[in-house]
Length: 148
Image (cartoon, rainbow, N blue to C red; front, side, top):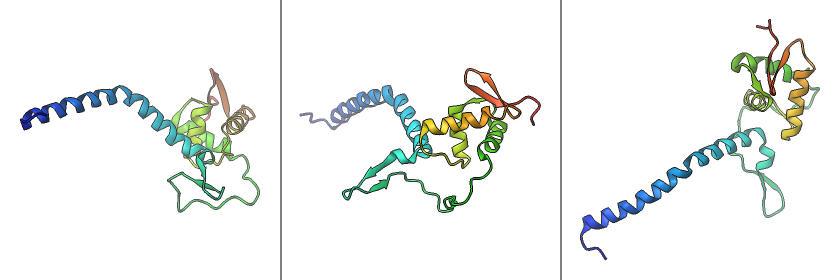
């Protein structure tokens, strides 16, 4: 056992320095996973539900919007996906469908919660309106030339 308090502090500091160096090595992966989980919770809250002791699902998503619109019980709006996509492209420029889907959800687009189904819905909305959107290749889409 060390009797000198300065030696004890130096020894503890050396231990913590090693721990910090190890943490710095994995920090980029941790940040990437944290970002991915944050986006995934917003896009697909259904997949972040847990089952409580009574076999009932409880949502684990922390963020709830107290001013959220009630569920749409009437007719669907006429193709809000393409209208919202126009606004997203104006704000963010060309992008692949995956990134567009993230921006649409951030803007309030309500998907099904199924990633594949939502990606197909966005793709269909873009491809069915060649007068509005163009496929630039490599999975990247943008507004058709001549559109403001």
